Image 1 (tube, rainbow, N blue to C red):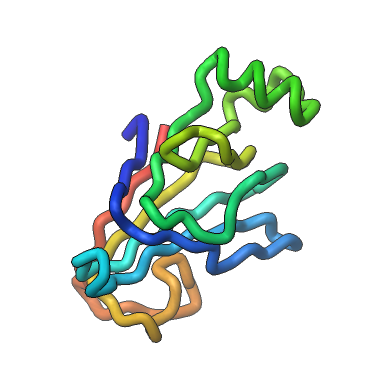
Image 2 (cartoon, helix red, strand yellow; image 1 turned 90 degrees about the vertical axis):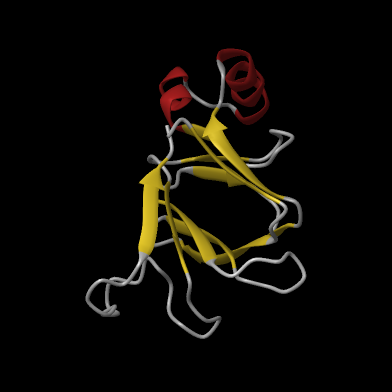
Length: 135
């Protein structure tokens, strides 16, 4: 999937682990936005990020284009090699993460249940979850 788009959902930063350089953004099911699934986006090997704690209108995650990366490189002193790892994360394209390829998962689960990327938790056999990568 070249882009990950989920408009009209509230996403928030729920986890950043600096020792493992992992970031998770989550949108829980709410009556306000009429959703019944949780969506999580995982970024591994995070090198740099510029983001808000909450995205009220959804996410659009995509690799930065050549012109977009040129602006990021100038503003944030990025190397040319970072172009393959620069991901724009909001619909307007102003916020970004330099990391490995983002992964996403979506499933019906409650607010209290662990992250869909929590590998210490055992999900039931046949647990219905959709997943993919960006880029």
